[in-house]
Amino acid sequence: MRYAYGDKSWPHDENGYLEHFESWDEDLAAVIAAAEDIILTPEHWEVLYFLRQYYADFEIAPAIRVLTKAVARRLGPEKGNEAHLRRLFPGGPAKQACKIAGLPRPTGCV
Amino acid sequence: MTEEKTARPHRARPESLEALGFPGELPEDWQQRAVAALGRRVRKQPDLRFFLNACVKCGACNDACHAFLGTGDPGNRPVARQDLLRAVHRRHFTLAGRLFPKLVGALDLDEAMLERWYSYFHQCSECRRCATFCPFGIDTAEITMAARSILAEIGLGQKSVAEVIAKVHRTGNNLGLNPRALRHTLDSLEEDVREETGMDIRFPLDEAGADILLVTPSADFYSEPHVSGLIGYAKVLHAAGISWTLSSHASEAANFALFLGSDEHMRRIARRIQEAAEELGTSRLVFGECGHAWRVAYNFPALLGGDVPRPRHILDLTHELIGNGIIRLDPSRNAGMAVTLHDSCNVARGSGMGVHPGGQLDIPRAVLAAAVPRTVEMPAGTTGDRTFCCGGGGGLLTDEMMEIRIKGAAPRAAALRQAVEGSGATHMAAICAICKSQFSEVLPHHGFDRGMVVGIMQLVGRALVL
Image 1 (cartoon, chains in turn yellow, green):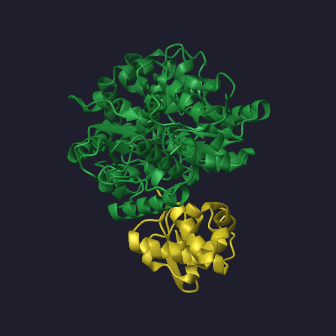
Image 2: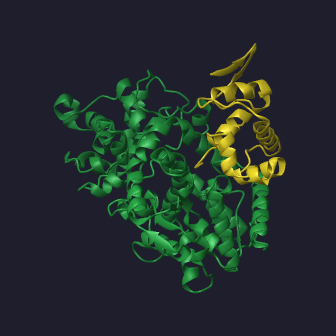
Image 3: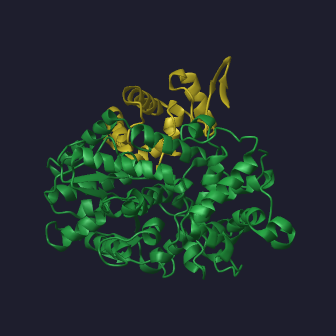
C-alpha cells in the first residue's frame, strides 16, 4: 500500500493515511488530493500547513473548533466555520484534510 | 485468510494485538486454541451457555435487528449470527454434536467458518435490541463479544478496536491526546466561551481536591457537535458553583474493551479512571454523554468490586440542579427547535440512571424538555428500550464499514422521517459520542442535514441562564 509520484513513494495504511508523518511533501499532498477528487487551492494549502504545524507541535490533530478558529484568523472570519471547511474538504476536515496533510486518522468515537 | 465478499473491518496489525497480550498472527494450532477459548468462556459465563442452548428458531429476533433490516443480508439475522457460534459449540461440547454433527447442525471451525465469524461478528453493533424481542432473552451481543474475544485470542482482531484499546492504555484516551494538547484544547474552549458569554468559565484539568472528576469520551475534546456538549457540562457546573476537574491520566470515558468482550482490558480501563479519582482526591465521579461508557460505569461496583461507588451521569446531576432551582434554563434560547431523542442502545438497554427504574429513559427526556421549546417522539417501538441502534456502535465506526453503517442506520432514519414529517421535528438529540459521529456522517445519505444531530448537554449549555 503505497502512494507513488515520479520516483518517490510513500507507504500508507489500509484507509489511505500516511504511515510516516515526516515523509510528507507537497507532491504527496497533490497525489492524495487527486485520489480524493480534490484540486488543491491556496485555501486548501492554508489548512494543510496549519494541520501539519499543529501536529508537529502537539503530536495530534487539532480539534475541529481549534482548526476553524485558525482558519478564521488566516482566511477571514467568514471562512472560519465547519461548513466552509466542508466545502474545501467534502470528506470532512477531520478525516479528509488530515489524510491529505499526512496526519494519522483520528481514532475513537469520531 | 482468503478474501470473500461480505463486509469486514480491517484486521489489526500484529503489533497492536501483541500490545494487548494476544498473538499477533493466526497460530498453527488456531482451531484447538479457539475451541479451548470457547470452552473457557462458556464455563465462566453460564448465561452464554444458556443462550447457545435455548434458541427454538422462532425468528422473533430477525425483524428486530437494524443490521438485517438495513442490509437484507440473511447472514445478519440475529439467529444466523448466533448460529455461527452455536454450531461450533455444539460440535465440540455436546455428545450428539461430537458423534452425529450433521444431524444436529454442528459444524467444524474451519477456515470458511472463521471467515464468516470475522465478517458477521463485526457487523453486529452489540445493541441488544434483538434480546428484547426474544422469548428467552437470548442476547446476541453476548455471543458476539464471546466470538470476538475468541478471535482475538487466536490473533484475529479488528484494527480500530485493538488500536484504540492499546492507545487508551498508553495515553489515557482513545484519541491519543497528550496532556499538553488537551490543555491547549481546553484553553481554546475557555477563550470561545469567554467570547460568547463574557464570563470566565473554566475547563479545569488535573486539579486535586475538586469535588467532581468528570470523565467524558475524548470525542468531546475533538469533534462537532460533541465539543458543544463539553461546553454544556462546563457551563452547568460553573453555574451550580460545583468544583470539578478533568483528568489527563483518565481522559476517556469510552471503554472499547466492552466491544471486544475482554473483561481484563475492560477492568484495566475502568481501574484507570478510579485511580485518577483517588489520586486527585475527588469525591464523586461524573460521566459525560457516552452510551457504552455509561453502561460500563453503571456497572463499576460489580466490575471493580470493593466499595467502588456507582458514578453519576451528567444528565442525572443536571436534572437534579434544574429540579431544585440551582440552575435555570430558558428554552427560548433554542427557539424554533423541535427535538426528538434518540435513545442510545447501551443507555436504554444496558443501564439505569438516577434512583427510579426507567430513569435512563425519563431523565434525558426531562432535561431535554427543560432546554427546548418543543420535544417530539419518534414512533413507539423505535424508542425507549426498543430503540434502534445508530448503526455505528460496537466498534463499527470505521471508514471501511461505511456501507454497512449507512444501511444499518436505515431503520432509525425511517423513524426519524416520521417524526420530521408527522410532528415537525427539526433536530435529533443523542447522548452518545458514537451516535453523534455516526449520525452526522450517515444521515446525509438518508436525506437529512448533518446539522440536525445535537447533544442534550449542548442544548442545555445554550439554554442555561448564567
